[in-house]
Image (cartoon, rainbow, N blue to C red; front, top):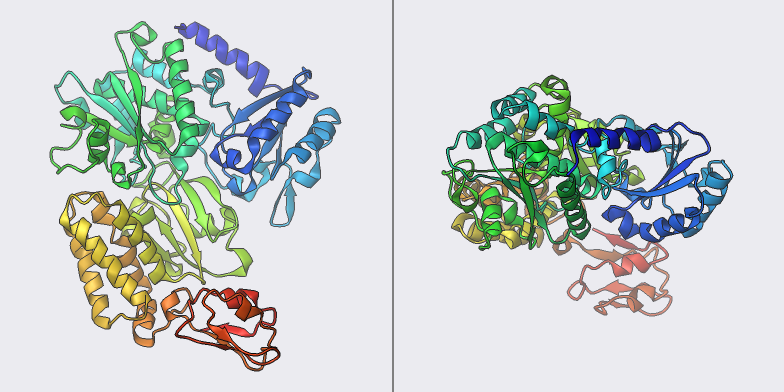
Length: 615
């Protein structure tokens, strides 16, 4: 256990030697070792820099989490004093050149720099992608070593915990959160301070603090990035929550598919205990708090708070009726608060900088920033953190770099399978909790999937329904049976067998499921159907009335034909047809048997003369 004076000394020492050094000719090489970097091959690059710099006292090599530009991994950043250089799409050969030419030669290797909109950028900080962001939850990701508590301390780590334990009461902490306007970043956007206040007033001696790090939405990886890049931010915030509500035990529920995050959490917990930030008599007071990790098996329903708590208890993850709400009777039937990783990642900064600082960002009813995982048909995939109220257009066109191949924006899915599709007519919507709900979507945890003109919105709705059907726990009939019936109707429509009556039934059933399901999974599962019916009804009607998929996606409505004026009879299409559905003689026009055709498109892909049309 370390005294606060020793902690302050560590902070000053690390800052002077690492973060605030302005010495030219001395280098720090940081390799991105989050899951995205590791998957792209960053580990051998990290090992190579360690080996090359082992006898060089002018060069330090370190690991960091994700900086957000996932499509450019592996990423290596070189700091010379305060000069930051970002190298992208690295490999071993490039790493050797950077070490030889930049570290030893003092010259930036321009060939490996990031190019944005045709402009070479020396640093990620020079990009539009980065300049339009405001990083609060992600403030340390890509900056500090997630496995070194000293670097977290150097960035004011555990300063907030020290303040609340030694200077603030429970009421003081909760008032600060209420004044800040922080709302839960896990989906519903419930005011965090209000949730904590409900648990704080309960008279039970035993209470719990839980963290939802399960992150089950397809395309969402915001929480994983914080866990892998800044795990102490979560631990500090959970301890602050424990002080606020009078709890001595916390649990992090994290999916087992996040092995890097789990490993770094385990390391961080051990470091925090060694330094005295977790355990008994924190900062020589009577406040005691510990944190345990519980691994989830990947059930989407366990993202719902009561299902998560049931799973921690060792039971099948199924939702419980509410009330009573978890703040009254939660984990082990004791008062419990549950927030997700991103929500907790804001807590320490609010305590340090004050409620007014946080509430100065965002909109009137949605304060602060929001992290989004950009994916789909967009040039810049990865993580972005922007002030609430930033428009969808700004995120897609400026930060995201627009749609690839000159295609047109069609829709964006926010909130994962529980959210809705936002059409181009709402491209300038200011993103916050209330605005998204008003147009039939929701914030969710922050997944943002971009779609272009080639996406079929009926097929998109079917894709998300397929996911929720699989993930329904089966406890309540509206969700268990209703989502399956929704999927069957959608499948019928995409096969060209739908009727106009099916559209009416689809809408009525979706509303019934939404109104009668037990938990948030079923209550939000119809959102993709309802939003696409609302904004893209013409596509549904085209599938039903004209038996056509306007985007040529739904196989049941596709017909491949061979143009007589273009076919030279090379036989390549016939040779590559897995169903042997194409016949014809050499140097003569071939024909596709529509009864045998699988609609796979192999013929079109292999035709060198563009003779095959898709209708």
